[in-house]
Length: 351
Image (cartoon, rainbow, N blue to C red; front, side, top):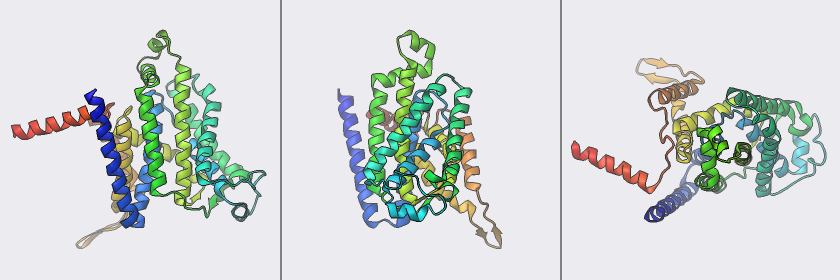
């Protein structure tokens, strides 16, 4: 009982601290700092929802970029006014009734999540008929199919031209509010009987089935929830950068999410948060390697794309020397924090 109370105090203090940080940055931070924080929140939403199916259920799903794309286009088409749509669709007119639909931002986010979940439901039947590498190939193919359709369906997505001039609805409160709701709901799911059933499927599907657990039903639930929050994050991303095109939703996005959840620790919601935060901050900190560096009489030219090379090296180092990631399968709790502080104090005492 004391542990539960302590955990609630810890989570409450974390929320208060987060609110204070957001308030200060929203009032005194630069546009660049606010942009980084918004990106961090969106990636936290994506990483936590992606970790639900990959880490908790043990399913190698390689198609989250498809759900992000579906959510981004759905939210965008609902928030754009009919006049804005006419200005964007200059080659092929937008099909009716999409050309006339218009909805508030919050409705567009919910619709983005619902549309992504609908597509997840439609592909779940062929996807969960296979396992392992075959499942990864099927989901990877789905992601590529969606990207190709975004290029081809000019009457819906405007094709390679993309959509521009979107309203910048995404603010710190929107992005971090969605991230907080995502973390809370998925953490509650992980601690529930459904979450324990998903872990059982991950550890031994045959044994779980023998215990009366229906793998398809539980995997479908995780798949739909993951797709919903990925779609919502796609809507937030679209209204943060205010322009979208099919090139934004390649496998490169999935690769980034894989880095986050592996570095943070597969199966750990806290690890997914840490991995997303480190990725976003590290991505900006490593921009220096892509710019010319002056060392006295020698100038080292910047190498475009070097950031991703370094991220790949970091991923290999983590896999080799910390195979369970930063958090492993552990979560931030009062007992975990007390253990860390205890070991730190013991080390200082021995020194």
